[in-house]
Length: 276
Image 1 (cartoon, helix red, strand yellow):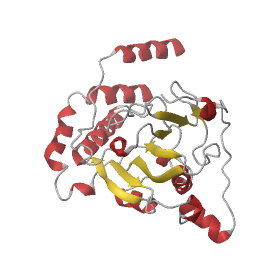
Image 2: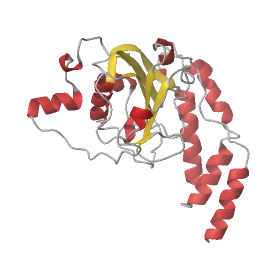
Image 3: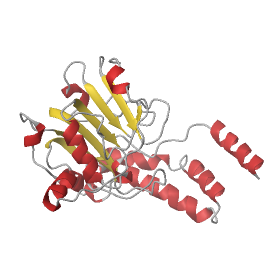
């Protein structure tokens, strides 16, 4: 059985790349990388293999890039839990990226508090999250955020840009493919995977309706991705900045939630790493 499964996986891997279900209907009004000083320190949370390269581009020349994830992977510099970043000093980072991660964080407000702490005054924060989107099983799936909810979560930052970046047609394209695959798979995971692959080809045209529909006034009723770009307000010292989220709850109750940090490998990384 394992041999058959292995052969099927090899066949699947050799097939042409399936069309994406997402139509990029907008460009970024604010590019986080264009707001940074020369030779910035950029922290990419839950980066996996992305190395800071996303829809708004790659890190600028001279960037000291720190890629963090809870599991080791090619391109990950530090293995750690984003809920606690004791190896980073307060006000030591110019930019923090948090792409498609908060839904898997047990305490998103605590992650945001740590981001606020490590950012320099005037530092830039970019975060994106799924909303109307299928469940993600790895590493976990605990939350969904509307773009307005994401702004509330990040309310201590100065808002520079935000909204949704995956429109109603792209959202329905993904859901229709998965619904039809589920309906015709007869509860067999291998058939479900195969149907998801093949159905994207004849239905690829649906996403292009976002060229028009994503700009409709009612488009905000159905979307699958939200994002927020903010700036940490300038202040002389971080200790004088307002507490919010996890920090505020701890301040009010005197009880801190504890999240056991993952072992941090390469302890001297931050001290010895040269700018990339």
